[in-house]
Length: 144
Length: 144
DNA sequence: CACATTAATGATAATGATTCTCATTATTAA
DNA sequence: TTAATAATGAGAATCATTATCATTAATGTG
Ligand SMILES: [Mn+2]
Ligand SMILES: [Mn+2]
Ligand SMILES: [Zn+2]
Ligand SMILES: [Zn+2]
Image 1: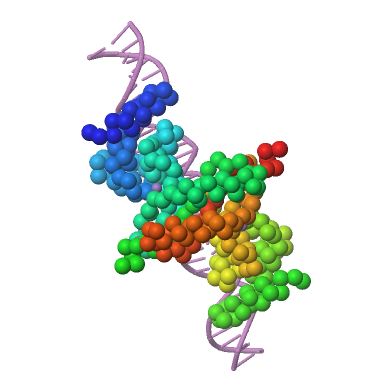
Image 2: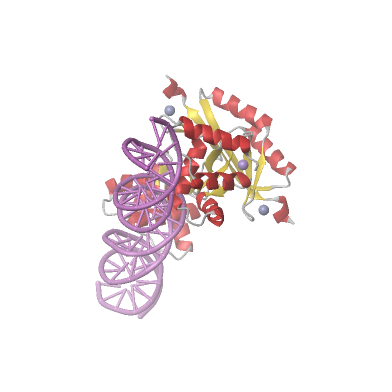
């Protein structure tokens, strides 16, 4: 089984917090790790239920919060409102090209833009803690 | 009374759509125009009720949609989930510096960043329809 | 292993934002 | 003034997410 590194991180996190392990948490973690998609809690829940049909909504949300706290995942939201989750561990910061046709998210980074964002903030006396940039449009595939 | 231009745009829009005028719509429009803040529907509703206490929630949402369709306002959402509305007519595209301490939004534009965003999309064969960029952190005032 | 302690779970209720439904009222053009 | 029809507001419905709580499972100890 892969993801030993991530599993170890989560195990350590759980132990250090005085929490307990559970089959549900393991199922959710592995299902999350197995996809590189940007899933909503509901989409992840559907996937996890293939592995363990009894898992409840609340447990998915609760575990997602723990994954966030342990540094394994990151929550963000597009303009559609629902929260989405993506891998954080071993993934550099990046922004997204969001296709309004197929819904796919392409991950991109432009160091020049990142630099200019810092300059822009500095010029306004603003201390950055994070930023987000999304470009909406039609992806190459969908344009044919 | 100011905002003649915006009022004419809205009147034309209503007429061309075969809709009707109403005191409520006028109250909501004027209240919206009078602030330069980035309000949620609920915040706007509170303000409008000072002018007309009987106005209902649904009417605020319905009118906000019409303002959007007529080009007078733009909906967007920060990472907190709730939709916010800002003036669109007579306002250039801009991005936001979002202060996590006082909640203030500062409007900014950097033509160099805008240009690099286009280049970035082009490089990926992506056809842009819009984009959003938000920088989160602490504003000058809040840093003391 | 048996037990006590305490965290985890899942069903379900609750919440907050937004939309829908519908009976009533207001606007408009004739 | 009237007939046609759009607009309104109250409240129900919806959707994503969180809270509550009785029950179950995990953990450390003897
Ligand atoms: Mn991503
Ligand atoms: Mn703005
Ligand atoms: Zn696409
Ligand atoms: Zn501030």
